[in-house]
Every structure is written in C-alpha cells, then in structure tokens.
Image (cartoon, rainbow, N blue to C red; front, side, top):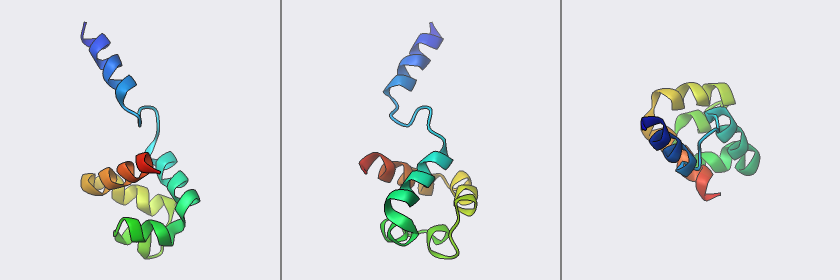
Length: 75
C-alpha cells in the first residue's frame, strides 16, 4: 500500500523526473547568468558562473535549491 501512496506523491510533484542539472541548464538558457543572478542572489550565479559549480553549491544548500526550483516552476 505504501508504494501506491509514493506513486501518487510523485505524480503530483511537477519536478518529478527532472534532474537539478536539467533545471539549471534550462534556466540559464532562458534567462542567462546575469538575469539569473538578479532573480536569485547567490554567488554561484554571479561570480564565474558555470553549470557544474552551481550544481555543487545547490546540492549542498537546500534553501538556494528551493529558490531555483521555484523559479523554474514559475517560468
């Protein structure tokens, strides 16, 4: 019974199946680093930005990852 509940939760999650790399890559393609840094004020978007450095930071920083995911859902 637990797996049915888990499946329902996944289907309700709009980010289900998306990797953080996909989310960051699409945001960069849509906004560019400069605009992304204006919308989410974190150094990994402002100073020498790259996908890999951003992923490293976001994986360790839940509040920043949440902001990135929220922006992705709003775009």
